[in-house]
Length: 150
Image (cartoon, helix red, strand yellow):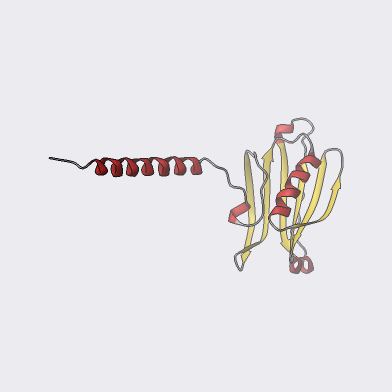
């Protein structure tokens, strides 16, 4: 049986394509999410776990949620600064920012939505620190938001 040299080249290209697709899928599976619940709310990188409750959506937007991330924190205000850049890149504006020695808080605004981010450094064990998100809408302010301390 005679094979044409072009057939070998086509077969090599197909194998290369399958190999590249396999590597892309494997690489994609190992990446961590950058946004909370497939929304426009950026999450902190490197958190070891999270607890989320009170999820509300409307018109494809996340409009209510309380989430706590477990992570290592050495500088609460540094974490807020990093998150502020990520929120601003996602279209959110910084409304307010406060700090104490072991806590930093910021409120981000996008339209009628508000996201309060509270970073708390565990003084005894920084690996047990947490970042809490509370997302609500301005309309919820009239009924009393579910603001939690995280």
